[in-house]
Length: 552
Image 1 (spheres, rainbow, N blue to C red):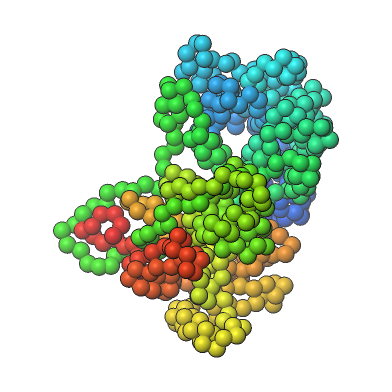
Image 2 (spheres, one colour):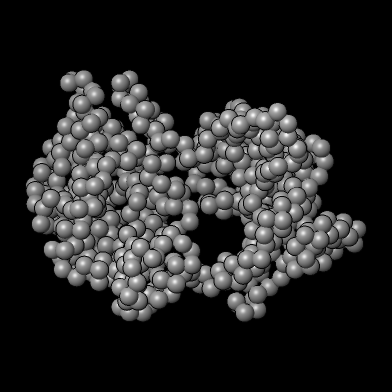
């Protein structure tokens, strides 16, 4: 919404037609953001006040803003995630939900779910907004669930809150319901930035009560976004108050609720409906046209077949958080990779090292299970982490493990003490110099002496009945210490890649493929000598030719 407002304002300021501007084009985005960034009545990009600045300049009148919201809302229809939430409310599995949205999409979703259920199974959804906040108080006092509380009002009412000045004060009754209910339940926050002071004030007040968030606090964000400083401080304070606190990465609300739906039991008719509502996959295997004759190669893919994955993973029943778990493993020098889903730890590597770190005399239940990344996203993430570690062993690359994706980048071997090892690592870089030139890594003196290097982003994905290692060449740059948005180094990266055409890309794919899997069947382990962490990758990339369908 902010981007569209700014595009319209930019067009007006420059006497352009709005249709002349493509708000999704990176060039237009950069130009528009530079024009408004900290100028012309706008705060710096990413500031919580940016939304209000754009909205109030586009629609100065509160009545105009209400009309805009009303029109936009009436054109909407429930998303998959909203319909799953409606089903959770209608079946009582989610007793209480708060929303800062004005629309009626959650109510519609709950109504549709109730229409599917038998009469005896239906739980009507109570809805409270600014004009009928007493409903929320009554439900809280009587335990009359499920309840949806619309903190900023309903679009059909004249009482809605949208700008910062309107959001500064929260309705007293709704604020009381929010604070009191968080002493009884846990809280999952999704799709909310934390920009309005009144709601954040209420969430922080809960921490002053004897039993804040007794079932935990989960704050969901996109992997590419950062939490606002106030949210980070709130989560830190919650942890200090003894609340089990988690930051969860999920790209969309649909993805999050889809994952939750997989672990919930719904009545059979409703369960079938939820399956029917699943969005069509954006990427699907297709039957390619087949010709009688063809020449090789026509199209080469940046994907290598993973012939063998570790067969089993270690498990431990413990609620240790991921951050604490990884810090403990690092301090102990444990030869093990591990991830936690909040209730159970999954690991690859030394069983003894894992026990020494997480057991601590607590007599935890340890076990193992089949490593099936297709059915368990936590196991999928663990396998990818261990595979990236295995690919880095003994090579002139450094792994980087991040919530938004793992990667490898080239490193300078000149500091390696052992002469033979240094020589081998230097030789391994020669093919890259033939493709990229000698400038493989270094420091950017113009940008705070930040390090840079050529690298690859890595993913593990299933296609056509097998697993593939996908690698995407890119230029890695050390994170900006000031976390500025946009990053000042972005123009340098774009300029670096501007002259790299299809031929260069093909050579990059070739050199990285040969580096990652130099042998016909390249065997490697995440922890040298530990066969339970062994991966086998074929050196033949996926490719397509006329006369064949799918990947070969």
